[in-house]
Length: 230
DNA sequence: CCCTGATTCGC
DNA sequence: GCGAATCAGG
Image 1 (spheres, rainbow, N blue to C red):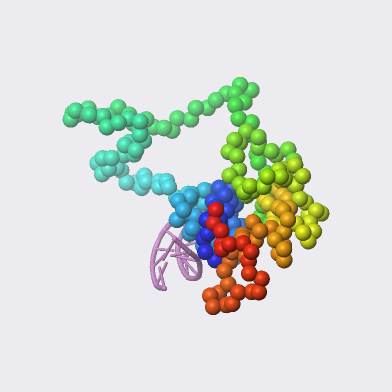
Image 2: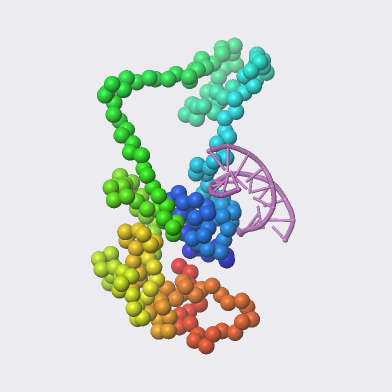
């Protein structure tokens, strides 16, 4: 399996949705968890709570080691991106900044500031790797519309009458739209490409995995062009 | 042990 | 660029 544009897009989407590398891997199929992680990194998208990468803070040898004169550069420089390079006239004036940030602004939580209710999201992962949401768990405030644009140009069926499992028959495309378990999961429903379970559009997707070179083509030559890449 | 993601490194 | 091997935390 290679990383086609499509697979990469799926990877991106899932990764951002917070699915684990394993889940992404076996949903994409044909790749290992490591492959997914490796690809994700190469794509630039990374991070996300990793169990092992929390190593960013090192308690200095604060023990007996008295940093009397050893380290002239505390973490002061990086702390202030806003402050440009202040043309500090070479002087003996020590910078007036060392603020022990150990300031804990204890607020009176006496019913004063209920700023963040912060409902604890509870999400479970279904067998297919999809995220299962509770009925009252809709996240309305989250604006980013799902970048999922799987439907190319279907003029007719919007979200209105989706093709459900029960609507499937020999003549309509069975290509799944979305993932099982999601509220909007349905099937393509277009007229099939004769002899195939999918419409022409999706045959292009379903069969683009090429046969090993040298293998002769099956009798029914694909009515669609070559592998399509949108 | 299982899981996780990060990194390395030969291909 | 790819991904198995390895590492390392939970």
